[in-house]
Image (cartoon, rainbow, N blue to C red; front, side):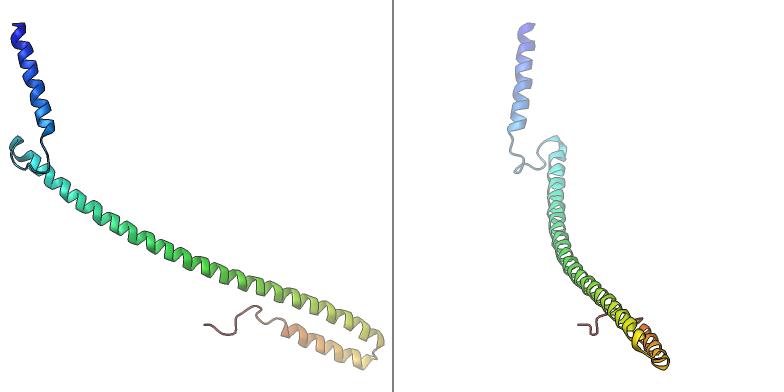
Length: 140
């Protein structure tokens, strides 16, 4: 009795080893009622989908890199405009301080009609500085 169960176990083990050693690529509908063939077909379809997704992923990665470069370029242009605007604001403030200094000197030396004239000039200067600052004059 023990002899037959040992023999059966050896045969079962040999079947498992044999089924594992069969080259899967060359076998289609030979075993398991076509199940291996179905699995192979499914594997090929999945491999095709993986290849398609890999290609799409590569294309998307290239688009992202290109977009990133464009945003970096835009960011540097925006930063340049901000620096230019800041410089212009500093220059305007410096000129306002200079005008205020000269105004004080002139008021000390001027007669009443001259003071009124300088006040009108101050109003005109104030109106002139209210224009938009830092706007580019031409767009390329």
